[in-house]
Length: 318
Image 1 (cartoon, rainbow, N blue to C red):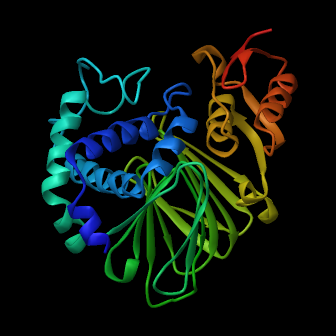
Image 2 (cartoon, helix red, strand yellow):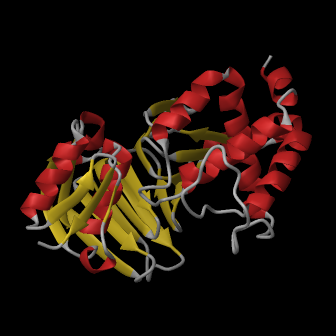
């Protein structure tokens, strides 16, 4: 049934899906209209299939060259409206949509990996060995390898991995590799910054830009900024690992840029800040059930001010 639906997707629908995919990938606070996106998804059951198909096609295109990647943006279609640049030129999107229409069935039937995408909600994913992953909002997960032992994550995820000394699970996130034989740990990735926190067991973290591998035991965490080649180790409370599931975000000397990225993902807040403020540091806990309140709390604790309105906030100096 799903294959039939995949094969019947019209090219115009795939182009719409491509446009929405670009907005989902765009990290700017004002790039995405989540209400309109939700309405589009709910308007036709094929829309979600089209979005998944376009995401898979995008991954294949990224893996085989940058001809369709964005440099100069041409005229943009009127629907869905875009307020800025995405990852591809709109002409490239049309080509990608045509390609997706031609290769829909082979991608779904022969692809060696399984891809999961979340938008405004979390998703629990059961792995074949009995392990599980809780994928955070606005995140992506790619499961592949022999027996699903190679995972790629963009965004956030909490891993609960069944102990098995005979195999090593590898998780790639933002150029960092996390190796594990069985533990509970959390990964957060935003642009060049990756955070790993361990609740139980031990993981090893390595990467091409890291000077050496780092072993993390339960109660320890790592933040690696590939753009600055900066690595920070710090203790964490095991109870705080993955606490975003309970609507709680805890920080120890985190940059404002990182905290705002989390509020966008976990509280659905649209907010930005000038580059001069992004390096400000914050330590404390935010409750994100009410995203705007959490943002006001953050700004007050840092002695900053908030301009704008719900849905379009900007943090500024006092």
